[in-house]
Image 1 (spheres, helix red, strand yellow):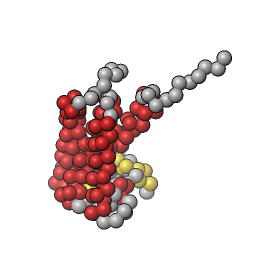
Image 2 (spheres, rainbow, N blue to C red):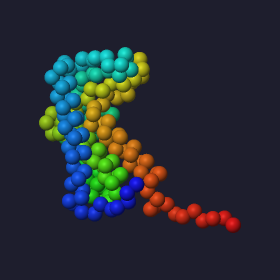
Image 3 (tube, rainbow, N blue to C red):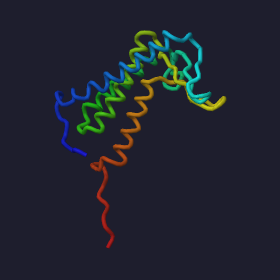
Image 4 (cartoon, rainbow, N blue to C red):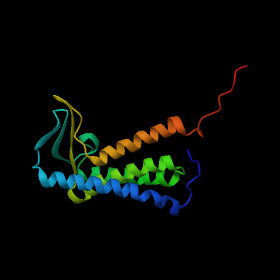
Length: 168
């Protein structure tokens, strides 16, 4: 892996299209769902395992309630600002791509919260009555970005690991 450090704003702008692409794809899929489905409708994609089910989530992550829409929007903004901070603090390409995916997903859900005071969700995965909370493209990219960050810090970044002394 190329370990050249990314240090200035101009170099970081290279990663902006990643976030904007995630935002665009998220908003495009949500618009398509809202245009082609009625609220609460469900369409089978892969049997009963994957369905598109159009819902709106006024709550926070996984539908958990942490207050009303204002609190959920505020928490989203705080998380977004924190990820931006991490993006500007990071200086390698792998983590910048990962943070760019998270930023794009956060922008997608934040856009919904500002426009509708809730988030449009439609990806419904599970088996029979055991189902994962319905989610969207933005949530998917946030999750992928988080997984990549964990992989980076556990397996790639060795700057925080102490040298292993050899036993003689």
